[in-house]
Image (cartoon, rainbow, N blue to C red):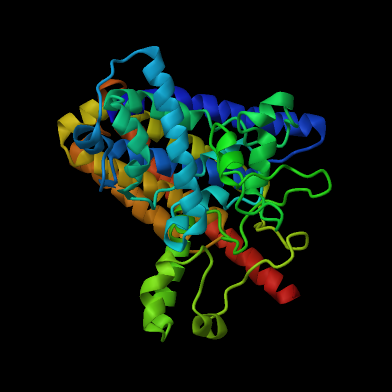
Length: 426
């Protein structure tokens, strides 16, 4: 946990700079593929994902060390060859996990957030799930376990394998010659993120594309079929926490509402998108039928809201970085403090993106967030040891919480007045 936090302290600024560089590059070339609110939503989603992972909000149902202990046919040492084997094993497992997530109703919920953006750019690579709280896919690492690949090798290679999937989420790199036959390229992954009928549920590979070619799921990007990005049932929110649970909530409601007892149990394991016939008729859900003619989710914004959203995002990133850099110290204060800190970060993301959605409830979430923050300061007489770095830190952080509540309240009132005026015009 602490080691991963240290890695993220380096990775997060690098990813942010690359996202901003892509925005600048697209603007410079006259092909801007990054919308501001969509970008902030994606970055916010990344914050929730890494926070969940670092504080350990998951349950391991089947672990790789367990498989290794009971199924290893041999024991091998930590050589460069072993790391290469581990990389291929992780990629093989990643292909099958990814494929299962796309084709099974229940498992789609753990992946939907990654496809929820209606854009395709580096920022959307950071849209990762927080809803997959049970880790059950170690079974796909069976080949590595049989070969006796040490667990510590998998632990080192896994983050590298994940980070290596970032670069190809872009529209600014065309086809890459002979590499198209070996690795996943931006062209391949544009196909994967598109929901045109020609492209949907194709190219599951994470690093190597030959898995798709071997197992029949490959689709080349066609020159006369421009990819259209998103999902058939659009999420219509900037809030990554809502997005993470939208699909499973629909499944829960469908299971409750259907009169077919078989469907109540089987709809979870049916192909993605399946809904019982009686529920479809009585409780229809908006679905995009024509991928070339639909309105992307957008919200009325202003320079002030854009600036404030970025200020909030950067401050949340500062809070995240402080936690990652001081995990051992925070745990030393109290084992529960890390969860309080994580909860505060989740509230921060929820309040910010609720404001971006122009919901009046944003002020409620901001008050809850500020109250939690002020309670922590009052209880500790500090902000998780920040006074050891800068004595007035608690006063500055406390003043920020009060100011944030006031500014959020001003935006909510402003948006309410604008909505009333708009309704009167319509």
